[in-house]
Image (cartoon, rainbow, N blue to C red; front, side):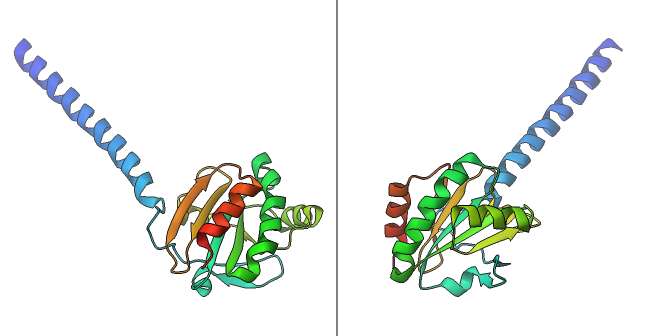
Length: 174
């Protein structure tokens, strides 16, 4: 009787342990599969900028794309925005496009932020976090460098200096 109970308890513990291990494995590998990796074709998306212009990533084939995800509440994002704007002016006529995606903020807040910093590159708002989810973004700021063929050549999280942005623009210049 005691042996049977011991076997049953051991079996139950084994099944529970296997279930926990499987859950951990499934969650860890799921996150890795969602993230866009270097060498992948950048997932296409279409968003409307603050001026009402529609931007589809695939429309920029043949150009390098500096794709930046950010938020007005994010201190590193605030700091790098003027640098991105400066480099946008340097590289926009050299085949490098800047697309920035604010994550789920009110249009008025984003507009005021852009006006205060005199930003004039395309700013789009991912209102339902769909693009953010597609790209597997979890920390802001996050930047993807996409070459003229639509391939991701670099993924960077964290604040960028102006020199680093310039280096990234050179890297994706067609």
